[in-house]
Length: 516
Ligand code: ACM
Ligand code: ZN
Image (cartoon, rainbow, N blue to C red; front, side, top):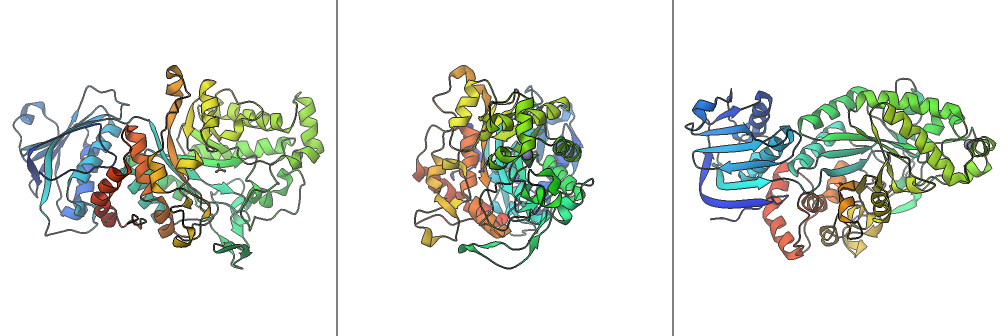
């Protein structure tokens, strides 16, 4: 029997003799027709088979052959657990709800010949699925990838392809970083200058020599229709899109459009260099909160995600220190300093979001000056912020830069790689990432929702380059988040990846080749 390679590795897999062969006469029986259709949609392009989908009828099921059955199990509807039984007579997918069935479908696709991932009919292929019994469920409920579209933008078609690839590896959160100093990328109807002005910058640093600008105007944004389309596309594939609208820092593009929202009040320009900008929203100006409320009103209408990311990182306090309005706010609210002012700022937004049934997520700087009561912390400067937050009873998403930053160089020898931000994170180190730190007591571990890989795009100007940086490292992250594996043999990972690379070829993903 040939070896079976799956990413992520299922919790339980038993290989059995024989195989199921998918052909033009195979029928799908599904408890929920939309799920049966989704499976038929996955299988159609490469096989050319238009598999008919029938409702499940308990009486015929035991006898039916040449069929794929989607059978509701006793699992809770929200559970991501699934079973997959492949026998020569039939294939049975079992789950309590939609996400479990979607995971089972991805596993089924990985068991088929990799050509199943092609967009065109593959006439020469025999669609054999080896007999197996799989019982599977994720270790962590938050399995994300982040993409910064502020520094560079990517076409809607690429975002959809990225979401497809994420779904293939059972990621369930797409963290869409939509606003930056260097560009505001989401249409907001009430504030058209955010995109008229804030989405355009005069030039971009040259990757090989970032002190130089390229002299080329750069810009663009996603319309609300495009955002809705992406959200729906992702939802159909079991992925929630969490938007990030940065505050109080990384907001220079917004200030360029509406200068009255900054402490200085004029002479802002969309940033043309990388790094951290001192200009941030004024915390003493009530108009800022009215503006942010209006912006988030439109954001919430587009994104059903319970979790809404508000940034919170890298907000220098020098403008606040010099601003009479900010100083008046500090006094009026009885705050000790600008750090407590940032905490007060975040609390205003957190209250506004929770009134509307949403949860605030912020980078770990939101711990400084005191954490907002219900905030979820995204730990990026290592794991320390996440550990502190979990100990204090807050939920945490882990994405320490030392293991999860996919914009870092993939090899110690930077001359072998395209220009990247000045840090290194080889695949081998990603694979060593342990999501649950030992420092967290067992009763607090439930606060670690999971983790994600982050793709900051200062040095990533194209979709192809984004794929080069993401893969295969994101596959290792998917495995770590799904399994929390105890065996971290790098050789074993490389052997599995070698067997799996045909899937990336068929998906047309421009992955970085493995080192020899
Ligand atoms: C971050 O990388 N500044 C969150
Ligand atoms: Zn101010």
